[in-house]
Image (tube, rainbow, N blue to C red; front, side, top):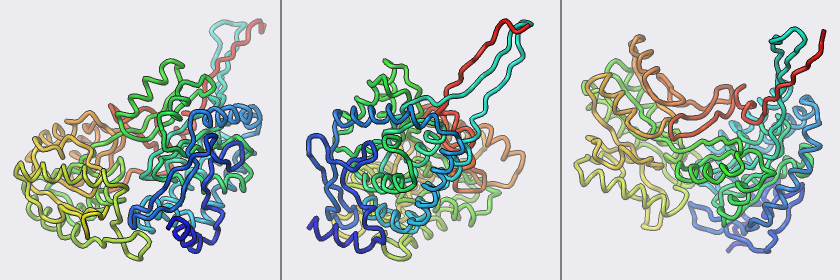
Length: 496
């Protein structure tokens, strides 16, 4: 079965060499030190796609040492030279976007159109930071004494370790690697065990683009703690960037404390989607569909709780449920599909538990609420739950699936209190027309990113990140480069 599936995938690819199974260390695809492998499955069909090198802490040490050696060379490249190499990496990603998207859909499950969008979105960070590589500006500070002169320069932090999730297996890598490489750092990546093939495909193109050996390393593994422990304990690694759950992020923060690493954390969310009574209801429904059901609800910035003002509540939930029922379900490789499978069985079970809890406490299921197809299917139907309350688990829990609980509110003050009643603070969305209220609500929401009359906050040119327990630091935009630079003060004396 594995050989058959592997051949089928190759037949769908123009560049069959993009499908790699070895770890990528010091510019070479190699087997794990233990020679062990682990399987990668297609979440739609359940078929095994490939068996991939199963790295451990020993492999991580080799990769980190390689990155340390490469850092001494890469940091001396001019920003212009690094930028040209990154630009070529970007061009190769765009040139082979369909192949990269096919690999992504087969291992992750999202519809092919979304996968193509992710590849282009991810590549945009490489393009942006190819340009920003020349802009690590310093400063000159007026001296505090007549014979003193003060300069501030910015230098690459060093070897960077990055841990990325399965829900955006390509874009979450480029969003971290591109600014790190632009700054002059070298990187060791641990992708999710569920989606390592996208990371390895990027490595193929990295070599082709001219990224030197050791500058970019990929460690697939089915034993995340062994790699994570080596990354966090290593004194060679000077920064850790992580995207994933808040619980794991807190653990990594504790582990990084012993070596006082610089950290970036993009963690969980509990995004509110607020619809005021003066909103364009059809636009709000369209936005809620896009924000809630993108990637089958499996994104950290997905709408988690929908709040609708009481005067338009009934009209909104009717239109919202109708739109949810009209989503096309199926294999992400098929044309027109908008909802594919969830990534694994425990994800489906978690969502089903949340739905059953809400219904047991009085929520009305307007659509969905079950798997599509047989009992083993990983596709969960788009689900809308009306009359949700704060006592239900869906209010407090990051759902991470295609389930939308809809809450009713009366006043602006009430909905701000409800929206902010969470330890998370990543993304928030709201619709309305009263400009004074738009300002008040945008300022009152305790979130790192807020969209007004729109369903997306993700773009290369704006900082991405959260507050409270949703994270530390920002990715993308001009601020993203700063995360991989250290500031150094240089004081000259005796100038008189």
